[in-house]
Length: 440
Image (cartoon, rainbow, N blue to C red):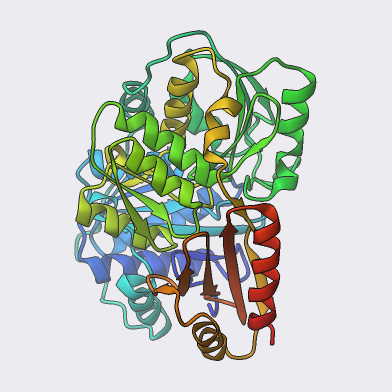
């Protein structure tokens, strides 16, 4: 079982590091840890997800808790089921964009509040590894079935305000975007790529953060258009990437800014942005009357910050978009609706909405292997003594016309650099300067 308990989920190779027996024990430990009485369980399209469900539900019911089986669904739909059904907890069986031999569990307490390493995964791991499970309940729990799709689809569609006909290209990557996007049926015309569920991902990895996976979508938009824009879902549909009407990739942080601008026309309030995001994101939120708030990286942290601030929305550089309307969790379909609302409100194409946000030159994320992370941070502090320092997540160093963030990897001896400056030339010079310090 070594290595399957991660910072934000449980994930391993099915039949090897993650077996049915382990899934049953995790189900028992989950109930023992939370003391929950009702647990929503959803699953993705992988061939072994039904076996994982049976094993996991066996463990949950052994400890006396009832299972609400919501069947094949996206991760955002599982979150919605947790909150809307008033369950005590939920588990989504998925390994997101990992290859087909992988599977995993995304776990939450009531209200779709995520459970991370420090808030429960480590405790569940200890219960499982130490064989410290409570005896089975005298009366086992039950399993009932509930189709969450009609309620989720109606909830999401209520936010649509499509003012003119749109044509959108969609890459489903043979994954759960096929189910998530049913909330969009009939709102606009779509042209689909890879729209058959297949947990082996026969066409490409379901990861819109990897630009190579967006090439089929870009080709479709450029050669079989016109399209207003294109979208690509990840494996469990809790992330979505966008290309504009020309097939050019839209940076995910700028999508955060566009959704914020659209949302803030109807209501004002706090909006969080990932600290790796362009300065243009915070500026756009403020210009639209919102309150921009910086978040650290990682969904568990962002969701907690959103709840504490009762925030309207948050966006992460990896393509996670979080909405108060979905229990402070992701909804890729809702992200698409807000972009569709914006584009359909006038004649300007998506690229024209993005252009004013391209105010600065970003480096993108650059990884460096290091032997001593603390020494790297010390060198950077010494090199820029007059900067503004923030330690929300790693080290952020800010000047008036440029900034950078350096974060340590949770799993590898790496630090990750994101840097932005006023011009491409300034960015390149500062990037090389900071990398030399990191790699010294």
